[in-house]
Length: 261
Ligand SMILES: NC(=O)c1ccc[n+]([C@@H]2O[C@H](COP(=O)([O-])OP(=O)(O)OC[C@H]3O[C@@H](n4cnc5c(N)ncnc54)[C@H](O)[C@@H]3O)[C@@H](O)[C@H]2O)c1
Image (cartoon, protein in one colour):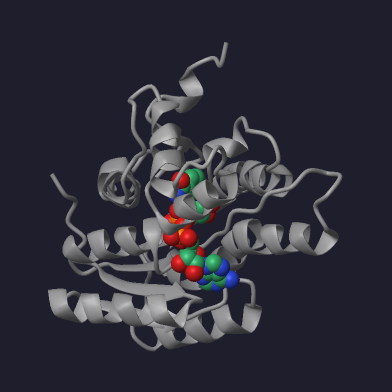
C-alpha cells in the first residue's frame, strides 16, 4: 500500500535513476515534488514525462556542488511552499581509483557531490524542513559504505561518511522533529549501474552481461529496480516510519549478508 503524501511537499535531487523514480513515486502518492538535476536533457525528459502523467513535479536545473545553485533553488521553492516534508538526496556519481591513482581533483569531486551535497541541501533547506514539524531526510548512500570492492577509494569513503552524516544529523535534528535516515543500495538498474558495467566490463562481456553478473552476485540472483528503492524511500518519508531515525537501510538483495568465501 502506498503512503498518502497529499498536501505534502518533497525535494528530490537527481533527475535519473533512483532520484527520478523516487520523485515520480512521491508525486503519484500525492506529493508536490521539486526535482533538481544537473543534466539538461534528463531534466527536459523528466519534465515532459511529468506533464504527460499529469503529475505535480517542478524540475530545476541544479548543481548540488554549487552553493548558489542550491540557494537559488531553495529561494524559488520558498516562494511556492512554506514547509518541506521530505528531502531525498539521490544526486551522485561513481568514481574508480585507489590511493595510488586517485587524483586530488577526483577525490574532491566525489566528496563534493556524494557527501558535501547531502550536508548542503540539508543546511539550506533546514528552515523549510523545520517548518513542516515532522519532516524526513533520506540520503542515498551505498552498500560500499559498509564493505567494498577494489578500486573505489573515494566512492566508498564518501558513502561511509554519508552513514556518519546520517547519524550525526539524526541526533541533532530530532529536536526539530526532523528524522534522518540513509538507504544503502546494492546494484540497482540505473544509468550509474550501466556506467559501472562499462567500466568493469572484461572478457568481451556486454554491459547487459556485466549487469547480469552483478545480479548473480546478489543472493536474490538479480539487480534491484528503482521501483524497489522508491518504495523504501517513500516509507521512510511517510508517517508510518515516525519512530525511525539515525538508521541505514540496506536494499541489496542479500549482497552484504553473504560472506565471499
Ligand atoms: N544504481 C546503483 O546500483 C547504486 C548503488 C548504490 C548506490 N547508488 C547511489 O544512488 C544515488 C543515485 O544514483 P543512480 O544509480 O540513480 O544513478 P544516476 O546516474 O541515474 O543518478 C544520479 C543523478 O545525479 C545527477 N547528478 C550528478 N552530479 C550532479 C550535480 N552536481 N548536481 C545535480 N545532479 C547531479 C546525475 O545527472 C544523475 O541524474 C547515487 O548517490 C549513487 O551513488 C546507486
